[in-house]
Image (tube, rainbow over all chains, first blue to last red; front, side):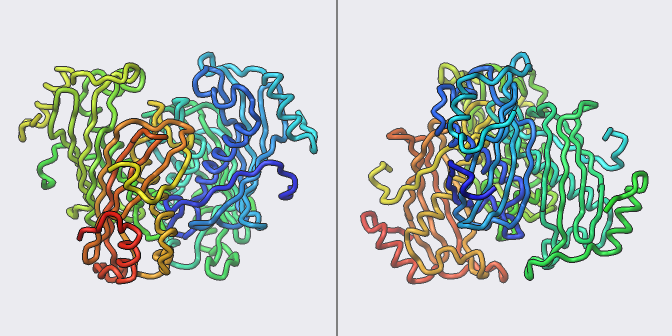
Length: 145
Length: 145
Length: 145
Length: 145
């Protein structure tokens, strides 16, 4: 992946409370950064149920996360987080995320979410309008199941 | 992996502040749990420099993390986290971690750390006494490079 | 307050992710420690609805917090957190908390919670059995409204 | 205090990971918000040593925190955090902070920091240029020792 493979970026600044005694961001906080960027990506899709997942019983749950730490982010760094939807299965969605400080790639990751009914604890098919909207946003690189 | 593949477990209880609006532990906090369990694993090895890595310039840095979320942990759950060293390379160490609630596997993960001089930003060979000690602890399943 | 003014203590160990670049616990995390200790205090009261507050619409909400930082906690410190109920009003409960490392007082604090119906957003009288139980636990020092 | 008493505001959005099972921001996270807003306030003062406190042994440490929770912040809320320096003592600095969602005051707080040599663990006089700069920024309401 390269910066140009992302059509969406979210910018955030590293907080004091996120930096550890090694003067670098603690490894777990990058998943919080991913989540913040993902929320903004989702808002940008303008999908109607965008932020409603917290109220209905239909919600997205993290199923899998992978992270590679290339170089550490430090206190007060301004980070740009690229998000792209890389694949849609029957009930799962896969996203690639990369964190840059200027042109330097610090962290790359992958998140898989499953769309599910949280009360019945059963997966549900990804809605068609989600599929279309996400495909159209990421049309440069076709989504794979 | 099965529970019996781990000779080391650390127990912790889910905190209120770690549970989100979906009434499950936020996905990023499992890396904190891994880190807490790893600290205790390391203490159990009795390796001399165990916790000294914060003072010297020789430290371990997270290089890679992988997590699979099988079932959610909830507020006040008592979790048991298995840790085992699964491989030692020239300057890297690979650990497998699994989080159980009773007999139910909730989360499985893998962490790779690199041993490095943080001032020079260069990797360093894993010390021989670490290698021997970790191999002896995990002797049931030989370590792979 | 002195150590002997507390009949309840909860012990926890400082996590790596909680320590900042100054090599001390970030000031906000002590409220998490207070919350963890408060959960255990509540469990110890054996009040029937102890942990049910997350499911009913009757819940306790933080109304006020005060913290004094006397000396910093550091990575891997084993902390003992004293909790005592110091006052019960019509719908509010006031708790004193102190964090010790051995005999050294590191942090002292005060939390006020209000008992309320979260749907109607109205305060509710503290149930009589709570009042009796807490008074009996803290009988050495009578509770003040 | 009123919104108009603040000449400085920092805006941030509530993150998913900061919201608990009660669907409100966990009480401890407001201290992180205070800290983030304080960092931006400090940057705005353009004091030369602004962010250098992490490298020298002269640093500011939290000495006291007070928080009142008036109404809860919720997921995705856009919050404005007012910061003002309200007093400078020989070696201490006192700040008032208020968190608004639109015109609604959600949280008000007070932080006292002490300026100290972290190696010798001794307080140090607040530098004169800090004193002048902060007084001039807050000139509408004179600072009290």
